[in-house]
Length: 195
Length: 195
DNA sequence: GTATTTGTACTGACCAGTCAGTTCAAAGGA
DNA sequence: TCCTTTGAACTGACTGGTCAGTACAAATAC
Image (cartoon, rainbow over all chains, first blue to last red; front, side, top):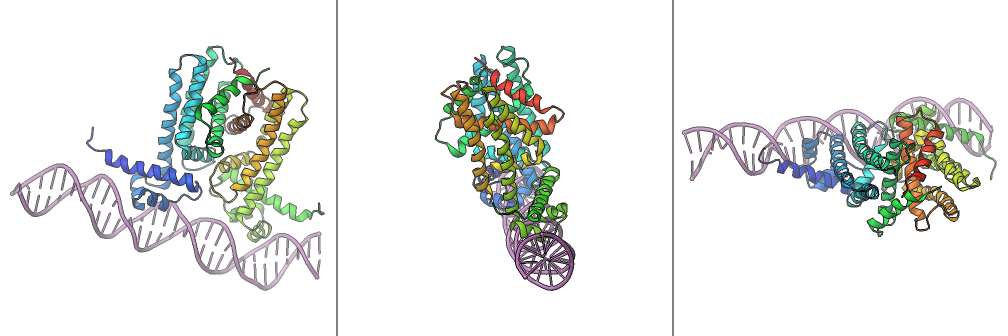
């Protein structure tokens, strides 16, 4: 292909990282384009050259991050048995949030916002995530590990909510806990509430 | 308590409702004091007379709403058996989100934001909510319905996350489903993933 | 007669987005 | 080899609008 998209990519990535850093330290509310540019060591105009608008930047960042997230989840597709499916779904999600905690924050604070310009993008990407989860839950159901009356869509939502909230709590309140420990708590819980 | 000046309460409530209406229709991002005052049919100065600042208004609204939420959850305290505990926790939460969907939106989009002025308030109130959940989950554990190795704190987080996400999805995507149906999906799911 | 509300006009900070100008590496002559 | 051109990438001072918060005198409740 073309000889050097490397340069373009570098600037965009610097801006992504700067944005995530600022979200982590100052929060989404006080995120200004001036700050992002300064943090990235780049002129404000560069942001507009590369992304067109602040919304464009956030939109691209969301796509970028959710693609990484989806990749982690797809690890579950390679699972061989039922226990492995759930363990990989939950573990993959936790891995992602451990690696990009600021992204979790960004995701959670934007996902259910009513009208933002990038709401459409988000719902699209959310569908991608939950469809991966739904597919794996359907496998679980086929293996007889999920009662047939359970609505897979609801289950996917519940799984997503559980993992996101537990991951955020983990990062914020008990970061000293290991990933495996947190993952196993969730798995144990999911198998543990019985009749 | 002191005899309540009904009038003050009325104005404050009008402002709460107006704020929730605007959050529902236009989102949190474009929420202005001028709009809120207009929506409530009140002068801008009145907002400042009653709440001191925009943050003061949001802060008070958050306290107000989370207190209502906590009340719904406390219904679980009156549960007699184990199944009833979970059903009331989940049902109470869903009831609340069905009645005040805008509040769910507000809650979710602000809860994990890093530094906002009212973040401290939110975490305080969040503790109130999860401590109610923790107490009930401990009861479940005492009744032998939760494996002793399950960390109650994690379980409370998971339950909270599940209910919030499922409730938001319900309101946004399938509002035609009945509350009982959604509640039962969640309960079924919680009891359904087995070894 | 005190507490609350109104209406209008104002200030000043803040910030997304613009744009005329700069930099520089590669392409293309001569 | 040296000059010229091209254009993509980048710069940062500037603009224009928005909005939280203020001021305050008059009106209206309680």
